[in-house]
Amino acid sequence: MPRYVVKQGDRLWDIAQELLGDGRLWTQLLEDNPDIVTRAGDPTSLQIGAVIRYGTQDADGGGGGGDRRRREDDVQIEAGDIGADPVEVNGTTIPTGGRLVRVRNPKGADADVLFFYVVKWRGVDIAYEIGDRQRFRELFGSVEAFDTVESFGQAGFDNQEFVVGPSVDTILGSGESLESQFERDLRSLGLEDLPGWIRRSAEAKHLIARAAADGWSSGRLWRDLSKTTAFGERFGAVIDDYREGGVTIAEAVEGIVADEGALRDALRFLVPDERSLGSHFVQRLLAQGWTGTAAAQVLEQASILRSNPEMRRQANQVLEAAGLPRLNEVDFINAMRGHGPAEIVEALNTAAAGVALREAGLDDVDIDLLMDVVDTSDRLLTVDSFGQLAQQLAFNLIQNGAELTSGKLGLSRDDVVAAAFGEESPSGRSVGETLNLLARFERDRRAAGSGFEDATAFTDEKGRLRVQGLRGL
Image (cartoon, rainbow, N blue to C red; front, top):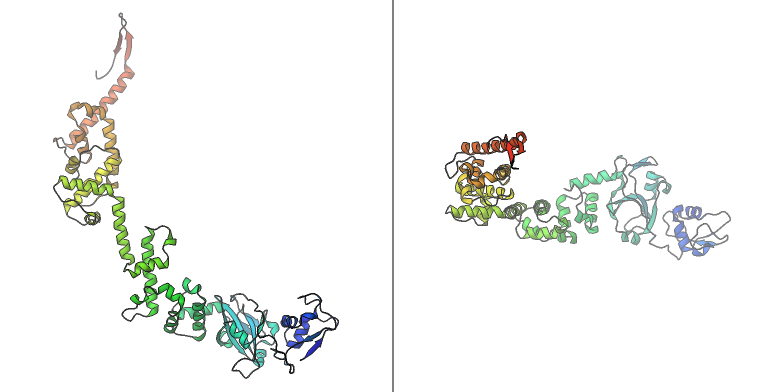
């Protein structure tokens, strides 16, 4: 086995450069010869006169025969993801973020060593073959051009689960980053980006990387993806239903995702916590035949019933008073959508007016009176449509409460209610007459108030209070 004796001034980096052709391989020398240092693991504490033994299966060394092989697997040195800007190495433009990997005794190759340029994409290592020593030196000159270098035997290389791509020539010299190249490859495979179920699956990401590196068709990629565990967990419940009629896997996936989105949007109104709307839950609904449109319709109907309990009760009172059938839930929903005969629309409008009056504090307005004065069967109105009218009516009834209670000038509450809706009262009093009487009540109140201001008061000879000057009395 070749040996090297440590001399004064030696550095382990320089020894590795001389013996193995790469100073970065000093860790291998130290691992194989731990006794050459005075402090364990410290490469700066070399012991003068120590003997360094090194193997014959070097990546770049070439030494003679021996009976000991270097370890097949070296510690993997992590490198960053693909960089954005290519750089120039020895006149050759390469994307940044990669690392040099050297494989000793590559299987099926005539050369004693093969070099690869390895880049990390979405957590997957993709190895582009550079070639043998001669090809490597033609392109890059020496390993000094690289920040990170690793050396493996064939078994160690295989254990890294690299996705072996095409020749490194395919990514050299273009001036384009590998990230943008992969984005283009993804689009050619029918993917704008990697969905979550692929990003979380190492198996699926390896397939994507292989497809991009080897130029697979979209059909082949999806066929292989459909066999992964991640695909089965994501789409297994409904994929067969969506593939009926010869639909491709990619088209079926697109359809499922679209329907899930529509269904999830519809369900958000009912389930505000989106964590409850996971893929498994939504897919169970899809498997049961639900679509986003159907769910939206059902939720709309539920919302109508939930938001209008008083409307339905009032409407049924009106219909019963008119001798018409009551509305069940379905009939009520359809009527609230504007579907139904005129008498149903009128009943709903009367109910809306009743609810508005109740919200304004008028709980005692007779339903029969409302049926007579609410005449809007041509269009469906809401409670809000009667909101301002109800508030004004409540004000008039309160302001004129004393006069109406005493029956002054024969005016009643029903007259005022009918006038508010622009209708003649059941007693036959017109809107104009009612408004004139209300105006007179207002004038009388003003006159009484101003009369006290102009009055003179005194006590007569018998001690009684006398008031003079009250107008209207």
